Amino acid sequence: MSANPMLTADEAAELLHLNVKRVQSLARAGKLPAARVGRKWLFRRDELERRLGHAAGPLSTVTLTISARNRLRGTVAQLNVDGLMAEVVMRIGDQELVSVITRSSAVRLGLKVGDEVLAVIKSTEIMIGKEGVE
Image (cartoon, rainbow, N blue to C red; front, side, top):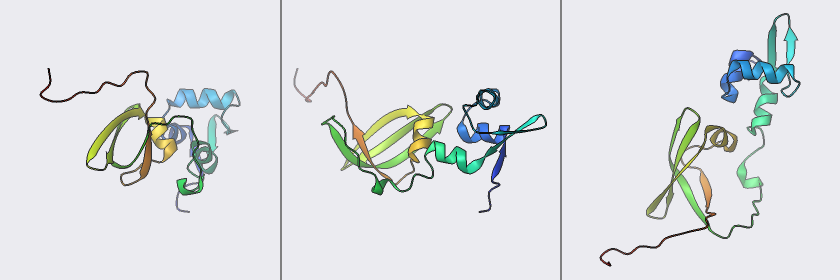
């Protein structure tokens, strides 16, 4: 493994997409596993990645059972991550579906272009339109 197994607070904050002060606060409160060395916090990369779900294994080994009936299977065609949000463009047949999710959700899911994913639609209202009809 070429990556350093121990991370500084700054590196942990980058990995977790959090402010460094928030990471230090979570470590002090015991909510994030860390070791204090002098005045610095050190974090185990593998433990943080495990908590993010990176080490959970391939999605194909996981069964997804949910109550929502409106599910569309597709492929991630584009992934635009900016700040706290991520825009996911799914290709479903010859159509595209766009979803905006949190960056942390995209990271937790390990999303990348080409991944097979499910769009789960849970809505109280769906409108149907037809061109040329007033």
